[in-house]
Length: 190
Image (cartoon, rainbow, N blue to C red; front, side, top):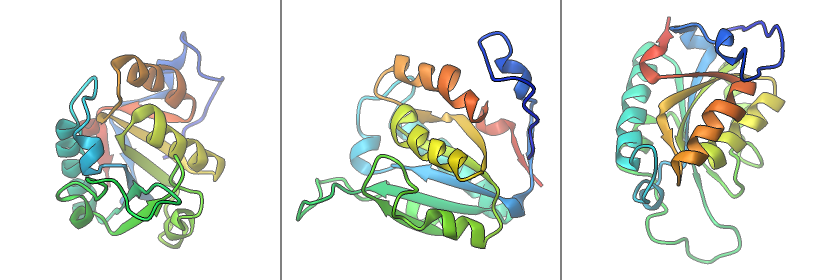
């Protein structure tokens, strides 16, 4: 997917950068699942529950795997502690849905994880994001991905945050500056 940006996105022109459906080449695309961990999925989240995001993300991962596209799952560990909090493992089904599982010790998933090298080895130049929280782990990882030169797509219904306001600000103000924000069923792999 190569999008030509005519102008910097604004409230007036943001929608013209997204055409539905988004057509992606499976061989050049990877799905990045961010922080789909038991303790995070269980939080009171908005605008949708963690369980709903998990279900949508796993369905998306199944579509990616069936098309031959790569899937990476990233989870966070707190640095400098002997034992991680209960629920720090990936939620049921996430590890099995991924080709690679990485541990990050920062908000974003690129610093010190080897994610960039793994993606480049597979020829991925486009990343689709899903996970929790939209405005934290997902956005931080996406910003680093943009800095690394990747094209970005965000599966809006496969993301959520601690509040609806945080999610909405991310998907309407921040993430469109980096890529297309679309529903997961608007992502086509060929």
